Length: 110
Length: 273
Image (cartoon, rainbow over all chains, first blue to last red):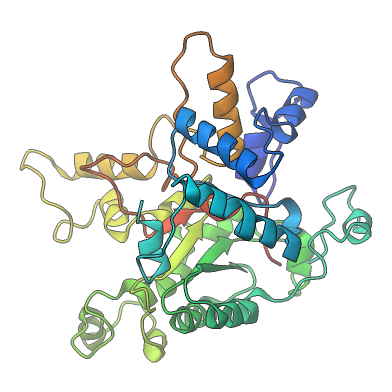
């Protein structure tokens, strides 16, 4: 990258992408951003297995599941809520019940 | 707003329907909150668009509708087109919008904080009410008392944790007071030889840990995964996708955040506007 790019919104996301100072090329940065080594493709159980393996290797206290550009749809919700989450629950990787009533307490539960 | 980020025009945004059209999040958050019982509902409201009192009042109201499951995702808006929707030519710089002369969000955030300060609640014996009766400081406007405190006691916020002002917002009020050098009465007890400078330094280091590490996120997860797989005998990079305040919790001096790193909520969403 020829220079450090700045923006007025989402500077953190841009910084994470451009990795200024790392000397990587735009192609390398794009590959890392969009072509993760962790290809979560397959049936809910396949994906849950990969997520379990990653969590075991890396550590962490949960998963952040999102879809870029707010393309949320009924299908996406269904696949996650009816497919992936039950598979993760069977592996004890996500909560099976809410024990706290407020969002603050739920976030602090871990 | 319709983004003009790509080539300076709205063409691509409209062609591919990128986040347009979209509704206002506030009534949607209210109706989602009313229709659910366990989900957390976090709406994005820009400090550019919302006057502080309205922001505090609507957030508190939705928090009551949600039974304590509502949060405010703090944004400052990202493009000038967002400002133009509100009759302004240009956006203020994000740092300016969030941080005014060292006091976060100038006169705005104290209103929001005060709403949720909640120490002693909103009853007649509230410390804040007593203080107001003695003559309110300018930064605690009297009209804020019109609405009760949030159901969660203190409003939940998702802060832009990569910006220093965002970290400042995310820290507990006690830490912030200490970082400024105040808080002698309210703060935790330290041994006598720890003077204010040292206490201040400690609070600052908790808000802005050194060395600063990248935020935990989906991208961080994949990078850590890559580092681990590619490393020759090196230890795996610790990564906390749900890291709070971007700092691993330690059993003793863990700062209990009043807000959460935005990466906990979403990674790819654009600011509202």
